[in-house]
Length: 271
Ligand SMILES: C[S@@+](CC[C@H](N)C(=O)[O-])C[C@H]1O[C@@H](n2cnc3c(N)ncnc32)[C@H](O)[C@@H]1O
Image 1: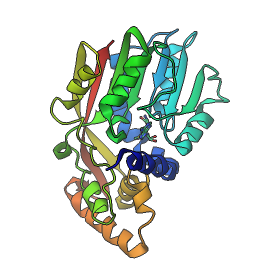
Image 2: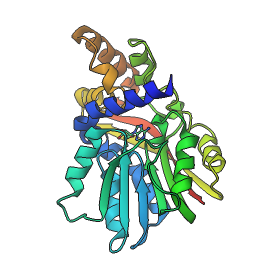
Image 3: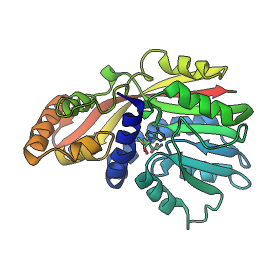
Image 4: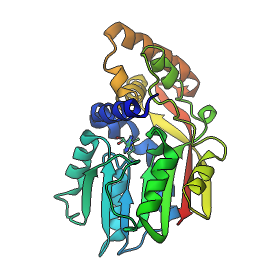
């Protein structure tokens, strides 16, 4: 997909998804966010850049970890996500956090400003992941740390059929490279290619819990990256796509509830 189009799909897709995001993904992404924060070992006084900050779930935890004396510059492509992040933090005593709308591949920031750069579950969506990592490298001070979390291998993510199910009903693929960075050693190579050395990687298996069919459907279709394509479906197309998706995750269902297999890859690197 042409990079400009991919960015537009992401920007406006996440605007649409923003209101459903936390109900769909907050608990499910927490293990990856916990691991990322554990690996990066933030200290009071540090200056942190976050790209693809979403609704600020990680931003808030960074803000607490770097106080007093530290700052957080949190960025995202989607106004809808940033608006929710801003409402979560500002007005709650987090005056050392600033939000800006920026593309992760093109940061409007001077070089060597930050001690730490963080991107949780955002690198799967940028057209050029190494370009985004190079941008993080550029704005870090020498010796600065980067921490990244992405989804793992397609075969280890039980919900992965959502992409072909949506893609076959639209003209262009929604997230063509979604599993690229989580496959094999790709993330390690990308982080090294951007200039970081050494790099540490951890892979983790998780279960994504959903209460019932409606919750699983909402998360996959309305609360995530296919939201823009999905909201253009007519009612009949929606019903067909829902039923195909529920079929694809049926092996993870017990009673009404789902525990869907998932995998994350979490990495740290040094400039
Ligand atoms: C799954 S959410 C992750 C949000 C947050 N980091 C978290 O852990 O909850 C993915 C985010 O990536 C953002 N995103 C997608 N493409 C981007 C880009 N090129 N530059 C910056 N953010 C982008 C989306 O707007 C969305 O908020």
